[in-house]
Length: 236
Length: 306
Image 1 (cartoon, each protein chain N blue to C red):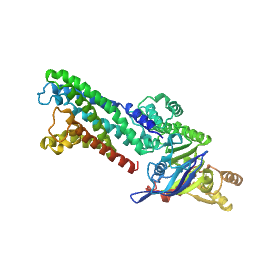
Image 2 (image 1 turned 30 degrees about the horizontal axis):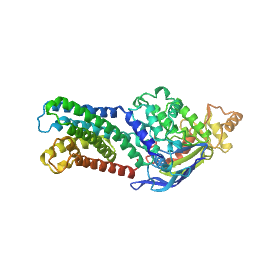
Image 3 (image 1 turned 180 degrees about the vertical axis):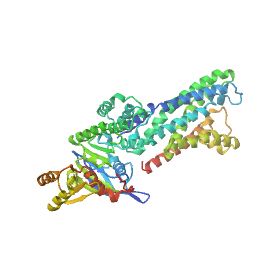
Image 4 (image 1 turned 135 degrees about the horizontal axis):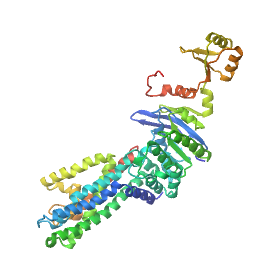
């Protein structure tokens, strides 16, 4: 049995749940709106991040999207029905992750460009240049996708949306925020911090924009591998 | 012809044997009832059959193949496990469309099974608005989606209204008549006897009986006759003279074992014993089942006075 039917089924599941479409819309709205708000009050120290400041809110929506898409399988025996239709768990999980990644990337890139255009019009003369702006827009899309996948992997391990969000949201809002301000070195390698280097005009840490995204990609890959391993090993 | 073959199937959870050395086959063209008290291991057996749980020992195959090795399995095997499997925020139609896509089942089958299960009118409503009975019908629709030759239904009558019970009986009979292999679990003997041709009876993970329904009834159900009369002395005398095994409760009702109303009625009429009531006891099938599974029920409630 080929991969395409499994992917098709997972895509139908995503587009037919209003909460998932809502989360995708929230990625765009939250990022663009909070960026525009922040840009009205920005200084000149980091013009690119003045444009993309809202990603801190957008990535919460991305996490909600990845978590909800997976968590819906862990209620009411839904996964039993899913795996009785696609018994190859590895293939099913790749299909699920792809069905999460593709719309997240599309919406993420759209968010990046919309946010860039909005930010440039708000900032006017102090706006970042086009080459930095493009890097930021692409980085924004990739980072949001990776955060959705990171959450999806974690939700598969924890088998619950509630548990996943109770881990990730405090982590983003408190741990990463506080630890990030306290110590430079290690905190730069946290999943949400590393990927966001691409959204700053300059960087002084170990990670640059692309190596930062690579670190976040490693986090996402690790979470997905853990999810795949848990899925393979356990009875459902 | 697709049979289900279970060989020495065993499943342990933390050292507890939930399924214990099961050995049976389910043949096509008839409805096989999978009976047992709650907790007997019926649902676990279904999950093992579908490759959702891994057996501790033994094998379960469908048409000679382990389920996870089937190509596009919904086209070969349809199963109802959990009535809650459909997401409450999705419509029934979208739920089935996603399932159909995963096995390249044509989308028109979705409308066919919605029609067949009486859900066509509510197909575009969110599943959360459904009653338990409607969710069961949706689960059955999902099982029939791929037009499978093997149908596995776990407690399909759960939550169905009387009309739904009649419908599912007819559906099961039809599926078997079409030559499909039909395995249906239930904890209710009477209900199962109404549609099954063959019985597999399970208690505490072990197979207690593998028998045609008719033989089970014949071997296990002893005919009892209930009699009430205004002349107990004459009746007692009559029964004793003909060597009947009879007993009388405080309310004055006689129970006569191993006999039929036809015989007793004639005897009483000939002897001129007045009759207030003369009836075959109906509950005996259920009793035979309870008798068989009683020692195997894990959580036996203390007997209650009726």
